[in-house]
Length: 551
Image 1 (tube, rainbow, N blue to C red):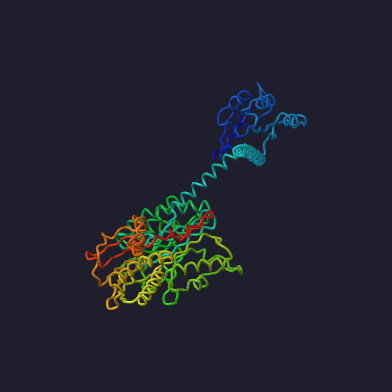
Image 2: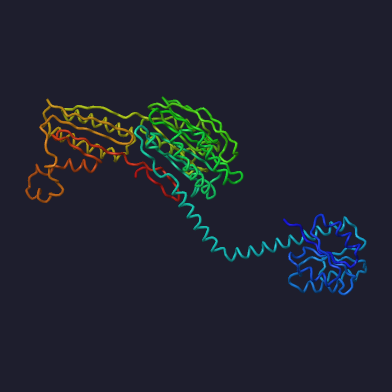
């Protein structure tokens, strides 16, 4: 703030020199020798903040001068303190009537002089502040409806921005089944996460972040940090250096970080071939690993909050995972929310909820969400919540043989069980089973002609991302291209009224609807069918909108 300006008006040189000496250290000083000079110098910008005005002066005395000051809109609000040797009551009263705020009698008491100047300057600035606030309030009141409308539009755009940056789907992996929940406690949240597959590097990156607070401000910060995180992902897939990645994120975020707003981030990179995890942490929540009915926690690693210091050193560690492991990644909301007894649930108690593996990932994940709701009494929790479940499992490979329908029924049941364990949804499992039925039963009825001396061979390969079956019979084969489309010729078939034709070619139509690829061998006695698992959506609750698990 600039120093206040004081205009000293006095026709006595010694008085002026004394006042200048006392006041010039703290104030900008202007000097006038009479009333006329006072009027001229009081309208020079910046206008004086206070005028020390002598009463007894030639040309224009103090009384005439203040009258003219109060008539000019530029100077009428400048506080005036009279300097006078007059002590008559009527002179003092006249000065106040003309608009003076105070008076000082000569000779001056320096302490009193300084105190009164400070008091009246503070009063002036307070009045100006109040006036400015009043004008601002009037403006805000007039523009309130427009402001509210703009705020609504801004919030709506912020929601769109955040939703565009929140990951909606979970990538498919051959040996990993992943479930994810994002549950902001308000319409917008401060949590963010990424589950990203490095296709060419055979790597998986999982990132969990938590910005301070929740709501609009936290969501904007989360969107900002998400964009910074995404910039460094290509280098991360190349180097697998999670510590260097956090160092880069920290350096970028410090440039735009607000004071006392320090997000947390946990990041891990999984090599899908070696099943090795490298991880780093910026004061986020370490994951929990469920193995053989026991919960394990990875070793802590050094690293402060993002944006806390540009000198922060981030550490990285490695841990091996194995088939059958289940890893939970989550934000601190699941640990800090209050149970029915109003006590924080804590990590140990939450891990009791996690320590359950029925072998069916989707079912278990749903039970965890239900347990959270039951424990807290309601969802969402009182803070933004992110929960990710990763199941590690080998590809199922098996060759089946059957020569009777009873044998096939056992095979079908085993395959259905494996599909559910590999996280295929119920309708997917049914469709796959129907398509497989058509091919296997065609091989049994038409290929082997129900000859129990011959076998149908079923090669099954089921992963967490796709299924593959090869069905081979011991018959003479056929030409698939010669089989008519039963749908295209349905009227003609019904017109001939031959029941044997009704089902002819049906299996090929069904399997082409339920599988992505169908390929017969040249002889027509063997068929390969493939189907990719449907993309899984993140369970996402915002604005009363729930994205189901099925795309």
